[in-house]
Amino acid sequence: MGKITPARPVKLITGFIFKDKKAFVKARGILIKHFGNIDFESRMMPFTLTDYYREEFGSGLKRVFISFRKLIQPQQIAAVKILTNKIEKRLTCANKRTVNLDPGYLDTAKLVLASTKDYVHRIYLGKGIYAEITLFYQAKTFSPWQWTYPDYRTGDYIGIFNHIREIYTGQVKK
Image 1 (cartoon, rainbow, N blue to C red):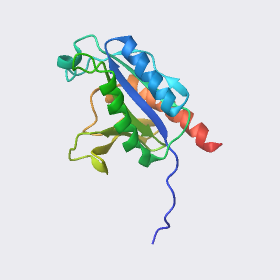
Image 2: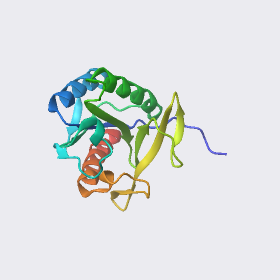
Image 3: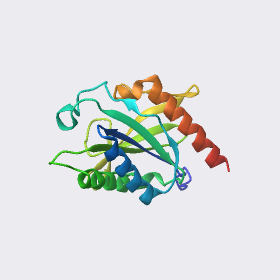
Image 4: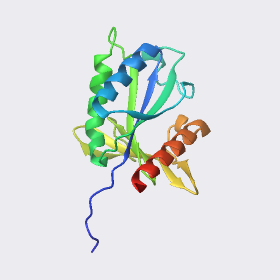
């Protein structure tokens, strides 16, 4: 029988999709109030690999990822997703979101995203929230699964998550 041990803390990350930078700045500020200082922020990248958000947001979308200095427990990701949904709703204008927030976490082995949508590769966490392992770490880099979103497969995104993983490994070694 295996010994039950507590989970190691993980690195909270959030992806933002937005058209208007003001919405990003507002959402980012709210998240900082809840989770503390940011230790990484990606450059603003065009979000072009899917039309999924076009009807709601229009074209010319951008993507930014951030990670937070303070580590969380993995089971907290469900509450984080509930909070990010509330933030999206709070920043809604004319019944349309101005920002999409994709919270998740990474550890040394994987990147996990939280979702409100069920699917064959997602595990129910409770309170309407599911989790999926979006990337796995092998041979010194993150790699995609067959279900990984197209943008998360790109070299830019994988480079970002490899960098955040380096920050994380430095934190857990201390």
